[in-house]
Image 1 (cartoon, rainbow, N blue to C red):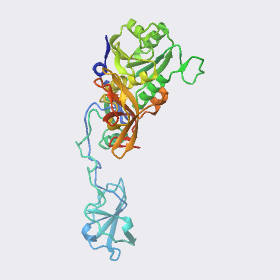
Image 2: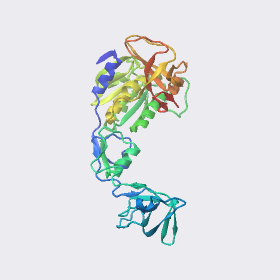
Image 3: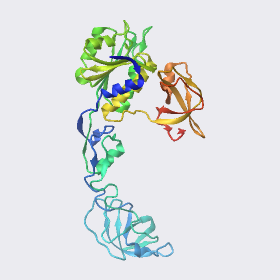
Image 4: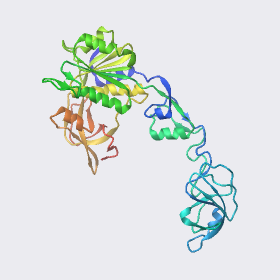
Length: 412
């Protein structure tokens, strides 16, 4: 097992040891957030017929070329069509057919004039506006043509994309199976949130934040709080092997006498990939495979736990979902204040994002509270290994954590 390696190497090793989930087929209503395993082409034209975009009257444009409010043109009303009615209707010059939104366009018609520009008297429609060819007509195949590609392999399925796929004639899609996660918090001092808090104890906030990130991605997970007892930890892991694809533990990562997680998984026969990474915060993180399953041993300190999860564990989970491992978008931002780290380390600094006439400004967090700083950050400033200082005023790429930020240069 490698120890005390650089962040870039750790990320590469992590991603090299995980793979996208197997393929499964799901009905469209169960597939939101999932990732396609193959390209999809439309099976039909949509719409399958040319239809009206408005309630009104199907007409021949030439009949209304001189129509105005002062010169209404009268057309003979010869029928009507409603949405879903596909019986053929034909009309000629000088005639009109009443149509509703979604109705089949009658043969001979080349436009639809909205009903607000018409009045009906007996069997005559008086029109007081023109209607150029194709006005208010949705032609067959306008939304999607048969055999046209509607989604690509690797696409994450949004509600709108699923709507398009449905319109293209598909009722189910083939996607990567979601990884099932086990989130285990360890430590005699750790208490499940909501229970009474004895003196000297603390709540399992790391477990809650990790679970929240998993929920955002739609990853199913189960949690547990386990005391610092080797047998209890081993039983918690062993009992979850058959229903878990990835383990994420919190606490016991340092490897000291009281840090038991690494020793327990080693005794269970895991393959250690690395332990301790030159990143701050997050240094004690460990990663390996247990029965072929990715196993992340995250430190217990909240800042280290969070950063190790965001920068190493979450990218692996994204790859297992079938996505690019790039989790957070980046944006160019001018640094408001100098930041510093240690050369040879990758440092991550909490920041807020502010708007300025020249674009985004990254303001490093100065909060004393670790948890408040974590909760209020909008971005991360990354100090790479080959630098120890980034001066104020320099434009850098930041990782954007909040979707309310316009990467073009504004924050809302």
